[in-house]
Image (cartoon, rainbow, N blue to C red; front, side, top):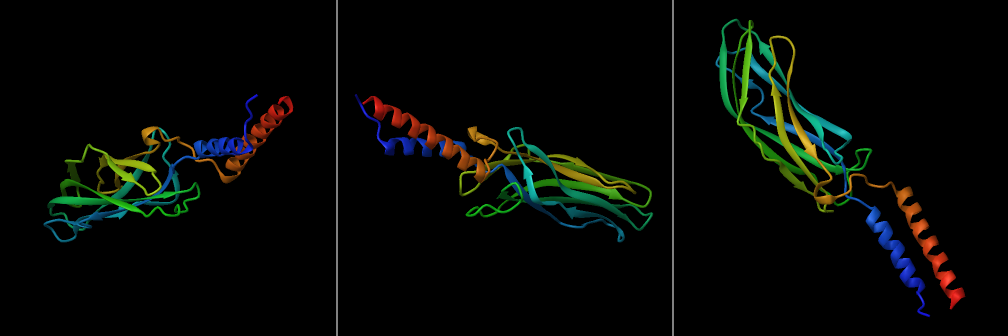
Length: 210
């Protein structure tokens, strides 16, 4: 009867563990918006932009997640209407992390930029802004360990004389068939133990039959 070596059993358990391990699905992000503030033709009237960030690990998952990249606030110091019309750049930095927001070893942060046209008018009575030319394509973030995320700007809502506006983006994970969950170390150890003990049991049964 053909015998199965113990080395083969251990190798099979190792394959079980490697197939259970997945690429990162948690990420931190930060943004920068230029020019900031958006000055107008009238001193004292402008749009201030607060950059967004997350440092405790957002979960992308198979269907992705929405993030707020910037918060817009109108500064209205004059009744005279000031206008602006600028090409803007928003840089979004993504960092692959664990579920607690800790950067994964060997994965350096990646930065991509998004450009659009931002225009409007600002005074103490009314604020009107328009964001055009938002890129429709996803930017792909490929990390050293093979983890892949994609980011696309999806929305803009303008501020008023009171209240803020925001820009939103969508982050996709679990790309190209990558599983959406990364097992915790304890789970990996349990999977390895199950695979190894089951393989050794089968191996011993074959030895007794031989």
